[in-house]
Length: 280
Image (cartoon, rainbow, N blue to C red; front, side, top):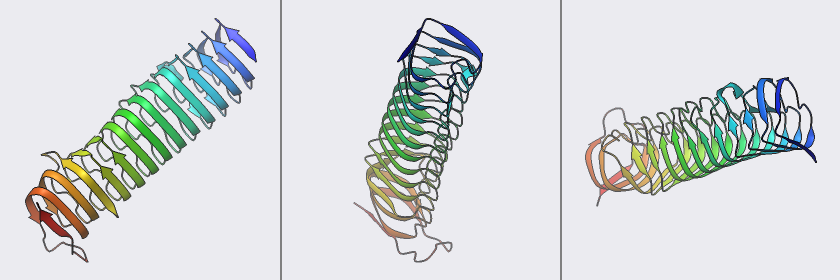
């Protein structure tokens, strides 16, 4: 393995197409595509300032490092990325990338991150300013997670989320095969047009949640006071602890809660319109 320590690189493609490379305490300055087309790379205590360092890379690990804002769009079109104890200040990270494993990573400026990816595993990850996160991304496994940013998980498929706090308007729109355990999801218009969404031991906040859903399942969930007008035009099986402010025009299934403030069944109901709503 080639070893490079305590050096500074900048410009166009300074470490292009290297294979079997270990870099430690290296600074990648201004420039582009520093490690592009490389494979079997390990970067430890490095600082990335230039654009596109890990494009078209295979099997690389980044530890105890930092991606500065100038390293935007750093990880695209690659496969096999493990990242540990790293800070990412740059936006538009992780596009069209497969097999990503992040542990103890913080991304405070995560606009348009994780687009068109497959095979994402996150543990102890915090993501903020994350509008349009996980767009069209498949096969996601998340545990111990915190997120702030709207329009997340749109068109996502095959997702499992545990022990999360997600603050996101319009999250999970048109998602499919998503299960969320032991989490708090807060934001308007949660999961509209989703299919096969399962929420277990979750707390839900924000107006008009879970409308236009197909095959929606809730087990032992709670609703905040602002989570009104729920389940419109959804097929749903829901067991809710506590109070729901209002339920409006569910299409079919069963909804049970300790109490419901208002049940709206008006002339705009859609067939079959036979959802059974009960209180304990």
